[in-house]
Length: 403
Image 1: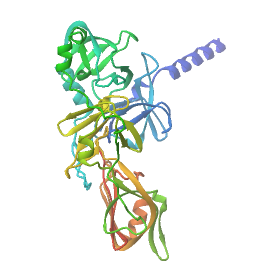
Image 2: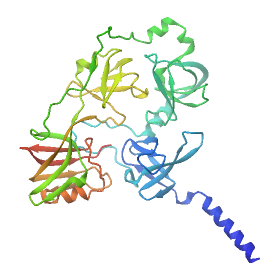
Image 3: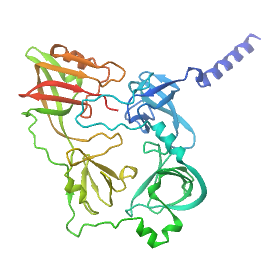
Image 4: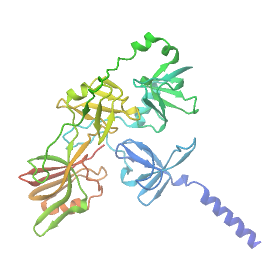
């Protein structure tokens, strides 16, 4: 009898272990845009999806400095655990707007959840009809996503001319099925054309501008506006920087920042981008992109289909009349100009508002090293950190919150 009771207790214990800890589940908020959900507890692991600032997530479990949430399994129709670094989550929802010291004005976008709700409110079921993926380049591809947003998890890329079945139409997004794979998801409506209309040459011509092509031997290579700078003799100014906080040190001879990477913001001349044609190439974030199509839309220039396409990119006009690369978080991109060591002036001030969970920090010269090395948020990068140089010495270090 005692043995039977022991076996029953063991089975009950195993069953309790196997059950998900639903009672312990709780919700947190994402504190930054573009926070990655990884397949494993490692930043080198596969990325399942990216989350938006303010998005609410249901936490399934915690392990060290990582939290797990349920995400769609890319390999099937079920769900699996995805891992998020704890430093990007909070018990309180971040405010809609945060002050920033960045010289480039930040664009405030609605949270992913609210944007999805807005799009879905506009969506209406239709009698299913045949359609095709249509881009302005023969080898173009378009993303089919699980949610009607550019941040939605990618299901697959469909090439130009792929067959679709349209199930619902909405503002900017359609719900479609890919007959070849059986996947159903959402696609930007501007890349979908009813099959019956494709057969009508006049209608097709009316919906697409003629694509300019560079004459043979006249293709151009477009690069960011060059910046000539001797990083060891920096003129007075404000510079985007990146450094390891352990390289900031107080020595007998003074306070220094070693191994400081100096950056310049990538900007393009308006004439270069506005005259792009198929056959040209453009250097984007360190790689040469072959231009197959160009579309001008307001202040934006979309190359190869823009951000929705596999090899697309988008440029936005800036306040100085040029263009900068427009990424998924609407942040500028930078080119590294060199690495140097900088002396910190005795009048220097360090201001830090990068950690949304903590009050902004201000430190004077004697306390700067301790403030940098003890900061909860450890990322000092070109997108959030600048130094102000006067007479060859650092007089300000500013780090801001990046949404």
